Length: 83
Image 1: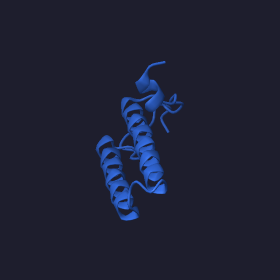
Image 2: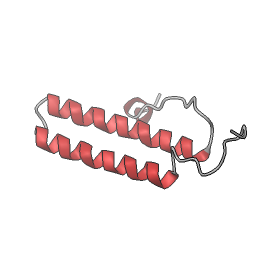
Image 3: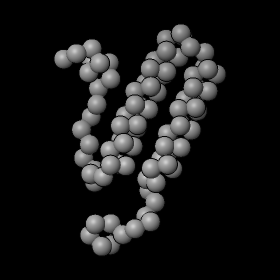
Image 4: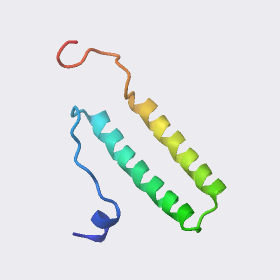
């Protein structure tokens, strides 16, 4: 196991395999990892609550922007089963 695998673990994707879903899943995992670091720093007194809030708010906006760009949750076409 290398250092990056330890610091930035990635979970397996179990959803519908489409490029946009895989990209969003990777972004979501990165978001969760960063949120965890921010929460731990704030809990440990290394980061003021206001700064933690602003950082989390910025990360949330980035994730929402990514979701919108990838059109996750939109249904412009029928799915593969024709539904």
